Length: 356
Image (tube, rainbow, N blue to C red; front, side):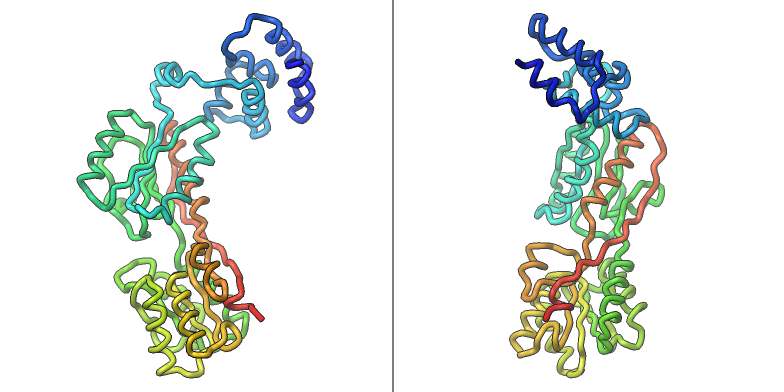
């Protein structure tokens, strides 16, 4: 019966006849651990190809890698992690070091990296430094002692940070390294602001104010500059710099309406600022978006979707940043070259600009 169930479920995998024969042979012998030879036979590939597919190494077709992984899953194949580590000189473990205790940025980045790493059965550890350099050094020593294969460094800000001192392969994601020789995967903040500004221009908004975060923050400046580049004469006055908070959004509305009663759009550098803007406009009897359209930035769903109305904003594509960083780290671990990458965010349109 076990053989029948396996055979019945293999149509999609297009297993060759000889693979089924080997599976039947295995079912008839004394039970024991599933070997990689069993997986290779069921998938119809060589043992070497099966090993590469399960390790996430080698230049294989996606269809071949998937077929091997499906065969391993059907047979219940379990890696011998200790033997694998000893034979390869690798721990098949990577670490994420972050300053983002809340997890707003680091969790999506880690999930994206895991999408790439899990194909090779690589475990991902997370280490929260809490902005403490001493704690970070402790983690680096501990990870070196554990012989992790690589490290992803990220954080809660897109401002550059000093490089970590280690011989382990490192990729920086979202939070770039100050060393141009390091591999960093970053977000194009200015491109995100431009696409939001183009959206407002396309809607016919002609009197647009811009409310940003702290002037010392790189993302706040880049987003303000990107929006100004597109808005041109439609931009009312200079961008207002303040804080990444709803309270600042509320205060900014009072400042703007005291000077520009005829504005018809407010673009914000974060979803938190934009939610404060929406709340204050509603309190003052201004309809969003009928009277004044509002845009955010970040697509933080707990804020953007809870806003009244839900916010048109920019998706940072954090999981994609994590996937790109994961692939770059695997290249470094394998001794291959990797390059720094800049990811463009995408526009998410909701009721704060196109509502009834």
